Length: 297
Image (tube, rainbow, N blue to C red):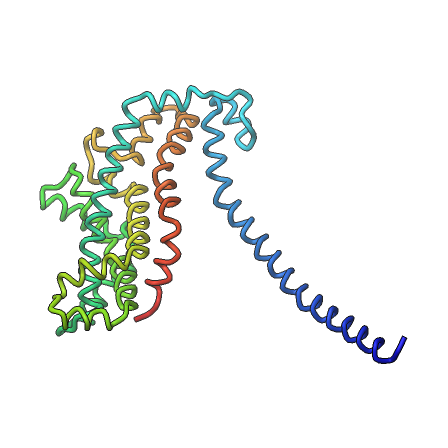
């Protein structure tokens, strides 16, 4: 064997060793990331699966073995809820409140965000900062003044008494995301539209909104889930059980001395499905929308 061939083999072995040593840290990092994602998925999915499985149990089985499979699968728990009028009534109430909240939030926040993104007027920065202050205060801190204002407006025990405050507290995040997303659109589009005689109104409806589908979907999902899971505000606004959303409908299974926990868990499983389905349908838009709306402008 010649010295040249030996050198070539040594060089090839050295190159292979370098490639192997270079791939190994990358492979270990990939495995670590995959393991972290598995853990995070388990943290999210295990409570949902436990809730669904415990809804199939008898009350005694649930109390004695809460972290195991049912001894007897009681399908009647889910069947009684699905065939009862109570479930569909509270589901319809929650759907109505959530849809109205999403529609008004998208309509108001998109117009406000477009204004802050493309127009300059006296006090625009101050007004934007004032709106963003809503991010600092959760809804629970404003319950007493909200109740007083809703009462003065005559909206107690009405859907609008819940929808309007929820819209107000959703606007800060929605305007922030939409404004930053609108500012990422090419400025040449607006210049060309104005030169062609297209005003701001038509530009907003025919160019901005069609190009902003991902961020609009993101805002819609966030608003829908917040409205769907609302509890404290409906609790203080509604007096009639016929207007209760699903979060208050749970009280139908709570007695003075005992609670039918197996029915509560089955009820929760059935009522969180719409929010999960909406998230799954819009999930491909959510990442793109958050990326478009998370850039500081």
